[in-house]
Amino acid sequence: MPLRATLALALATTLAATAVQADDAATAQARALARDAIIVDTHIDAPGILSSSWADLGVAAPDREFDYPRAREGGLDVAFMSIYTSAREDAEGRARQSAHAQIDSVEALVHRHPDRFAILTSPGDVERLREGGRVLLPLGMENGAPLGDDIAQVQAFFDRGVRYITLAHSAANRISDSSYGVERKWNGLSPFGREVIAEMNRLGIMVDVSHVSDPAAARAIELSTVPVIASHSAFRHFTPGFERNISDALAKAIAERGGVVQVPFGTPFVNAQAAADIQAQFRARAEFDRRNAELAAAGKPVEDARAFEDAWERDHPTPSTPLSSVLDQIDYGVRLLGIDHVGIGSDFDGVDGALADGLRSVADFPNLVAGLQSRGYDEDAIRKILGGNLLRVWREVEAGAASAR
Image (cartoon, rainbow, N blue to C red):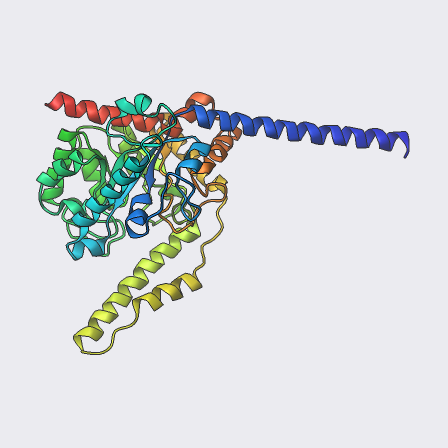
């Protein structure tokens, strides 16, 4: 081989080896920061699955996105367990029972593995309880339907450990209108909903405006005497017309009052095509339900709901979504609101596996850290996004309740 070619090959080999070493160093740095920082994920849907199909999440559970070994691998410290109840459960009067059953399942998991998990009810207990490598499990109620119309239930669920309440979910309830709901029952919040927010403020439960309609969110932010959160809401800037994602105006209102917007990893929220498909699906399902109601009223056989859902999923496959889509959301939020008002709420175990590439389970937080590092975020900023901002808000909500006593 001629000398010039030999030198060129040697240089290329050296450069390649240097690049690999740099990549390895960056990966190691990301993993180290993920392990050292306090990572707070405000939305993991494990409890609903535990209630319907038990798995021991204290050991490897390959069919789930959250379990203890992968949480430790990814550096996750505080995992809000989502106590989710559906509009159907609300309509059938089963929401309260379902919520209590899910809380029971989380408590059972902790009792089964007291060395690996602990229930967390105050941000002041994080350092003490996470000693020994525990993953801490605060509770967030996704959908205020279990409260019914009984204000005493806010205290009852606080006593069981609930520390945020998402006011509504996929349909209007007794508290609030939903961003998904065709019906706008209250044009925002109900009179009872306003009482609920006051009681949440009194007790120290964070008000969560993910899922609710724009007028409901605006009113909740206005009424709350302490900062509010959006526990798992991407930015509508990327998905125009998709009310489930938060508008710039509402996000700014949250930040101006000291709150935080927690960015999810789910494809339905961070991918414009997937968001458009969801909106179309809700319209199609509303029309389907209307037709079935007419058929039933006429005494005719109704169409099969499962067949409708299966056909929709077949004709609308979930688009692939890169990790950069989540990073774009975080970048946008930081530019819009400032570094103190953006966090993460993954929606693991809540979107049927429709997640951004590289963020498929709780083991993958180092990938998010590496992505943030590659975009120029320094360590202090990354720590805020990973959990510092949420813990600050939680402390302020707790302090607000203490000062009101």
